[in-house]
Image 1: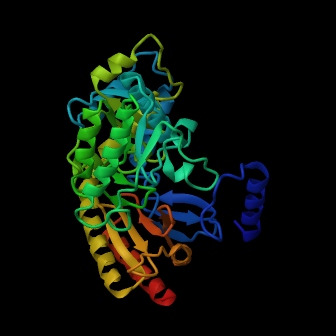
Image 2 (image 1 turned 135 degrees about the vertical axis):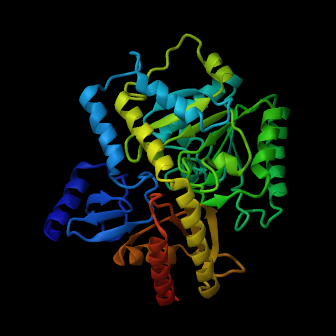
Length: 431
């Protein structure tokens, strides 16, 4: 496709698509094909995809494509009919989770799942009072914008509603409390919230939190913080909703789920993005007790959630993760890339922190390592220059100064070296 045709697409997009939809990079990409960890533009140029965690087992994985096609040729309907695919998939999913998490609700997106999880928790506790982490993002429905500081404190946001209570972003590197013992500071903030709610005669409905924060800046929580926070919330009558939409399915490398890295068991877990490898598939999984309480006569029905094609795709993704040993690959390649990035930190003053687990990594850029002033403009330069060199990355965090790395799990050590060497060259040029 010519550049003229690319410009024509951009013009049509501006004419017919909502202006709120963002587009990546100063010079937008026209992507026409994907394969494994690579994307290809209209000119045939190859790009190493370092950021699309949704395509978990690789773009257009043949086993996933085959599963969707074969099921589509047989049947695609809804959950009001008996179907073997959905029950087998639910059984396979729950076998990967703690035994109490045994009841599934299938949806089409992480936002749908988090919205439903809120309904479950609020119905069970009879309370809307919700505790969240600063800079967290949980979805795009109105109910989720209300509990997402990343949105309600950002451009166009209106702040938190009175039933949402925010613990400062639990960031041991650049948060309100810093260092290896910073958990105590964030727990003191939680204690204040719980005390105030009790004083007002209110109870907690739920605490919603990612075990590893995504939009907050690829943050590894202070050691022991989440476990103790959950205990305090439960003691005060609330539930814990674990938002695993960005981080589950082996991406952590050492564990299949983020909750396992923090040694916690939620009351409700939400999963999505990577579970369908690009197909719209998500789920809420909870205890039988919570599900039974929710079963109050009002039917839960989702026209597309849990349809046979979606479940066939989900099953294929699980099979590929296991069959191709992708969790171990996330561990080995992620550790290798993390070490390479740590060496870059020693050479480049702009790198303030390298963090993450498995193939969910963040490189925070700061102009000064004393003040930790965020280097947002430099981070934007980096991702655009990396794109010019054939590597796709993005920025995140409340100040957009964290380069996020969350590629398909087929990303290999050769790819890690290419990414690291290119980043080294670009940071040298910027410095």
